[in-house]
Amino acid sequence: MIRLQPVLLALGIAALVVAPIGQGNYIVYTLCSWLLFSIAAMGLNLTLGYAGQVSLAQAAFMGIGAYITSLMTLAGIHWGLAVLVSIAASFVVGLVLGYPALRVQHHFLAFVTLAFNTLLFLVLRNEEEITGGSFGLSGMERPSFFGFSTESNMAFYYFSLVCFLLAAGSLWWILRSPWGRAFKALRENPIRAESLGLKIRRQTLLAFAIGSAFGGLAGALQAPLVQFIEPGSFALIHSLKLLLMVVVGGSGFFFGPMLGAAVVILLPELLRFTEGYYLIIYSALVIVLMVFSPSGLIGLGQRLAEKFKPRHEARRDLKQGVQL
Figure 1 (tube, one colour):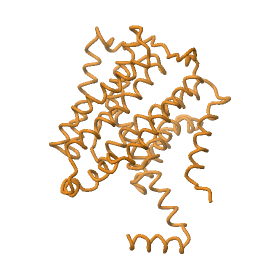
Figure 2 (tube, rainbow, N blue to C red):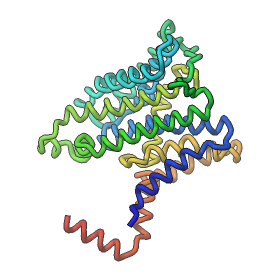
Figure 3 (tube, one colour):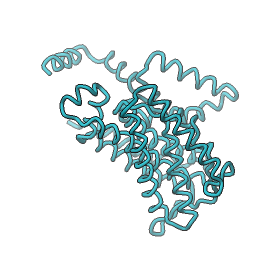
Figure 4 (tube, rainbow, N blue to C red):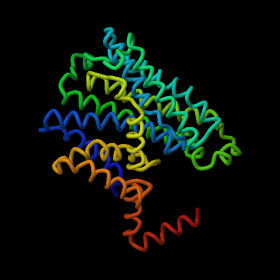
């Protein structure tokens, strides 16, 4: 019997491959934005959805990745090296930012990360000699690899898709490793996890650091995509936007950030035919979703699937649950 999950996964990848074919530059650019924001949201989902650590600074890590990549590529260094430095720097900064999580939790931790995002924004805006200040940085070239140029939007989309699939594969491996199981235990009950021998301090720091590294990768992609960055692109509002992606898609679900990013990035574009009403419709849909399904779209889908599941399957699942 053919397993359904691999088939659906293959169909999803095939859909991503053919999605930009025949589309204009703006649609391809929007799809690229969805891919890189999905990467950043995946990192936030690891920190928030799996490890249970609230962070309002994911856009700041995108900023770290974007500015490091921009400064290095403008200096003549290849993007391949710049992205490694960006990911490493984001990992280290995330590791340092994770230390307050050892002392404070929940909304207090949210305030700490919010303050960090604001601090980074002020540094980027005021250090004009390095960051260009409010005028930002521009002119970053898109990378080339062994003669393959990503200068066109279509080529950059496929380049971003490869990065997206590598990031998703890495996250899939992490969640099924002992680290991933430790993150889930940390979210569910830290006291019980510690009593079982789990090193809470190390897992909390790793959750922040790995999630931040995903943000650094997304920022490293954003710099050559837009070819212009400025501090406002990484302000607090964008961290809230990433948080919305995770919550709308389904916090703690693997595909939640990708679906949430599609809603936040692509849905407003689909609603533009309503002209001035599209933001009102979009906001109303998000509010209704959060009221009736706090677990997001994937949580809603699971509830509907369970509701329409045949009774004999429901009894079988119940029996299995009792046996476990």
